[in-house]
Image (cartoon, rainbow, N blue to C red; front, side, top):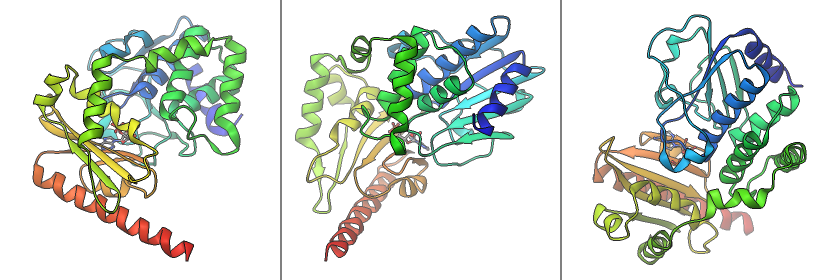
Length: 324
Ligand code: AMP
């Protein structure tokens, strides 16, 4: 058992009130990891008060129900922040309301939140790290916990396209499946079954992507189109992962409007150059090959796109130089 896992298991044992949070605008890895950890702690320690918090998302309700807590100081309490590197994007809680904060995350380190920070950028997902924790610290994963963890790993690793070095992701999933006896074929539809209008909407995006000579592709999706295809702005964001492995495209970005935040949400992906440093200059951040940003004006979006295009151009040149 690694030292971080041992320390985390000890803190879980010591605290009676445990709250588990994650980033705003959750994806399957964020939601699944927090619900799986909550349920595994409840299974091991039925008398502890354990809550998974944050804004509920209706399309993720099959993962489990989230809990509500009051916005006040909690005595002798432990907060977990999962899948979130920066304090400003923690959903639903104030860090100062808790006695201790533990971060578990696979994003590059950004803000220090507490004494124990288990950050593993080689892990495919936070669900992979929670799986490792549960197996090493001998917490039981029942069927729904194991299904949630498997779904989070599948979603963030893009069906095992990205995996931790040495096959660790697959090794952990093998143990998880063996121990909990889940049938993975029944789990996939929760991620991949989708309505025809969404597939048509994806065809619209494919048809209208603007691709530069350097291999940067982008599309701004306005409300008229969203309404025409009867999808929502969240669908536009989620579809960004479906444009990988296109020969002419190295890096791509979709822009949709977040009505709640009154800001443009930009989802950026790359199959070559690292993009998170560019994103972090534009009120964003993320992983080397999957980042996001939130911007107010078209002018800022144009500037971001210009930099991403430049990044593609430089990357292409580097690759060419390496070959010569
Ligand atoms: P998304 O395109 O929303 O799936 O986000 C891809 C990655 O970028 C995730 O790891 C997010 O945590 C990160 N990310 C997205 N938006 C932002 C933002 N505004 N600031 C920092 N990181 C972000």
